[in-house]
Amino acid sequence: MAILAGDALLTLAFEVISGAEACDANARLRVVHELSRAIGTRAGMVAGQVADLENVESPVNPATVNFIDTAKTGALIRMAVRSGAILAGADDAGLNAVTIYGEKAGLAFQIADDLLDLLGSKESLGKAVGKDSSQHKATYPALYGVERSKELAAGMVAEACSALQAYGDRSQRLQEIAHYLVDRNS
Image 1 (cartoon, helix red, strand yellow):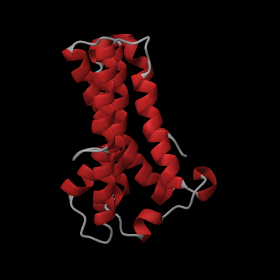
Image 2 (cartoon, helix red, strand yellow):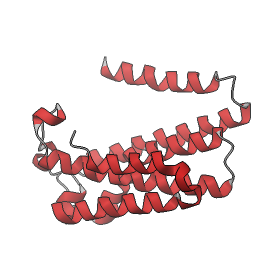
Image 3 (cartoon, one colour):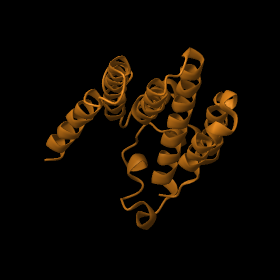
């Protein structure tokens, strides 16, 4: 049932985007392309999840951990901000800025998520904790330890926010979101 629900929701995303007649047809097509890349392909969510599963109980190395985290949540956050920029008519420089923001914020989110699995509580998260370490998953905390992982996540947020400098105060909400992604406790 869970797989069927996922299939249905994924298909619904394409239906909603392609049917959004208030948006320019070319922009809708570009957003469908963004979604397709973020979900599948060699650097999308599916590829990241496959790499995650294939590297359980394997020696952890920086390139693998970075790929897993960048491809999983990072691809989806990048897609979300790029899609918004495309629909808003952003130029190439604007699209590049939000792409960097999305990639860095997405990586920061995944590092924070891995830290929560290690340091959080079942009560605050609403799910079991310690699963990643018990399964010997390839994570930033497994590779770098807790303190260095926190530093890396904070650095990713700083890079994400810096990428939006050209937008000035108009980027405040996105900067707040990036900070929330690593400051959250659930």
